[in-house]
Amino acid sequence: MSFIEHKVLEMFQTLKLAKKTSKDDYMTHLRLVLLGMGVVGGIAFVIKLIAEFITFTGRSQ
Image (cartoon, rainbow, N blue to C red; front, side, top):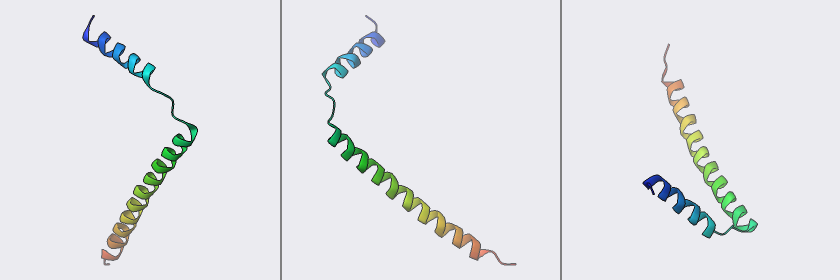
């Protein structure tokens, strides 16, 4: 048995042992992930906005 076949077999065995999460657990994790994405996106937006104001006011004609 080759190394790749052995690893694929281990993956299938792990998937067989894994249990499906409940809908409540899934929704909780989904909310946390979406909240995290929103926070990171909000921080990035604020940084971009500040950078735009700095470059806009820095130009002199």
